[in-house]
Image (tube, rainbow over all chains, first blue to last red; front, side, top):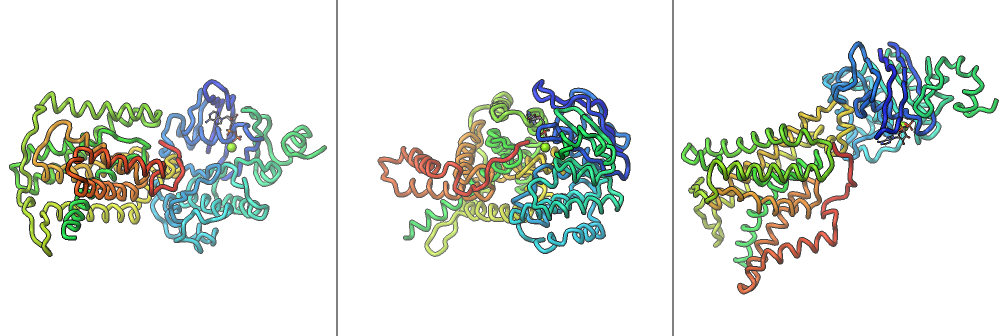
Length: 234
Length: 294
Ligand SMILES: Nc1ncnc2c1ncn2[C@@H]1O[C@H](COP(=O)(O)OP(=O)(O)O)[C@@H](O)[C@H]1O
Ligand SMILES: [Mg+2]
């Protein structure tokens, strides 16, 4: 569904991604982990058309995404939950959710109800300012907002960042249940062990290079991976 | 006391003009982080529109005065500002100055620099008496039109989906685009609305002053820019508030200052403005922090 091939990105000649190749198949939950500064967000932003690539290709559903405007990429069916959530603080919860309809998919009552059923807290604060929500609630709002657009591929950038452990659990539960409902997911995380355990396949990014990839069993069998990226002593 | 109310009406009328003009600047600034210094020249362009259509039925003259700045605003956005979108603040600023001079030069080139007399809606020039006050119908029209515009714009921003998208884009343009909001469309809408607001300013200004000339927008632009700065750049309610405040300061300083100092009234007005900005550099009605720009 999404295929990134040989992708290189540089900020003012300083390389941030080098020859990154990655694939997300229909219905899969694919993880992308790596330490701070590895280039994870750069990859997300390049897919979103916010950062220019120096070489390589990004193809989604047969459409080349490179060179397309961000809003057109979203309109093709890619949903984003950006790093840091980026809730509109000056808007109410309801208005934030209405941004989910900006991608051109019209209002759909059953989707709306289903999404709100998944995040009951948003119903409670529906008319309140989004600025008053806690971090975890804002993350739910960011995910709900993206889901209302009924994306075929959902890309989340560090959704568990800064959340209390219980909230992290619920974010991962939501992702698993979304996948069960047929949503394809690319999950970018620093929470490596959780991601590897949850994802069908995980890519490990380090200093702009894909260092490894594989299923949870494959990655866990590699001692170097365990030590370097999963924080476990062998 | 009687004189006080007379001045109050004058100041609200003048403040309305400033408020509408300030709003047109704040609207574009809110979305693009661009202070469009050509906004004043859009007033001038609209004013020339009214001059050419002055013998048409009044409703047609009005429509032309409103539509001409909208068209110019859209064209300017398309050919001047879109190519430099996302460039540095100084690039945007220089571009807006360039557009401003270009519009003035075009008028100088094809028309003349001498002011042209225009009699717009002469009926509005007559005053009526109420409670011993002499109120020109033009003041009523100005205050009424402004109130209508402010109410409609508030409703649009609060209740329509496009309005919500505009507010979202004003807060965080990149994230709005990540949700699928079309940058080109939302910016075009902002320019169109601000063009409409300048059109209203143009009509009321010409009706009041009775003349049009190539640099007529310059002073209005300055005043409106000051109004938005007092209120806090980017805050729409701040621009309106700043407009009315500036109208009140201007009229009352002019009215209660000794005659011998009358040539200094502008200086005193701006001294007050500077004092306000020293006290609150971010503007009176701003509490938001700087955000991402387009
Ligand atoms: N806008 C930018 N300008 C210059 N360098 C950047 C910019 N954004 C990120 N970088 C650099 O690119 C590298 C990758 O950053 P990022 O993609 O944010 O990593 P991650 O999301 O994995 O933490 C870092 O070295 C970072 O400093
Ligand atoms: Mg990141």
